Image (cartoon, rainbow, N blue to C red; front, side, top):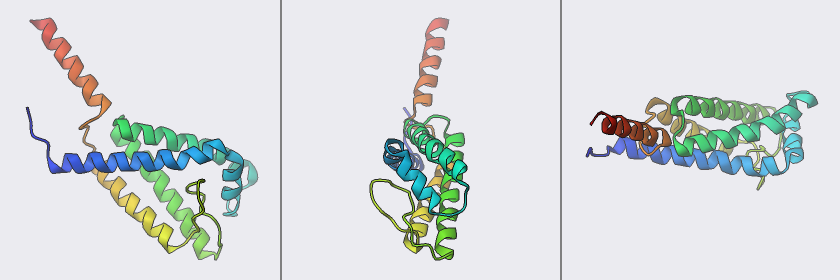
Length: 160
């Protein structure tokens, strides 16, 4: 039996943390897409039809990304998608803050968080965690690893 390295443990913890953040962020938006649409519209960057599409699509994408991160599915791809989302969200918050908009960021529909330096720093922290997950996509404690091990065991037993 092999020993678990510290990098693997940290990567799993980061992966679980990111997954939970994405799932938590998606829940309120999925439950109330109209409110999320209004929050997107407050950024004054997109036409209404595009904001409506985002209000429906983004929360479900966040939910799927969160589930995939927690279960360790397609880690390289999933962590890349989550990285793109986090960078996009950060740029939106930065844009609104630079334009002097005092609006709810729309990050978590459960509570109000205004755009500003605090939110940007929080997102940068998540981006750093996400980068580590992307650069070191350990399949340690993932469904994919379990299914691969099952297949190897099955093939090994068949050859005996």
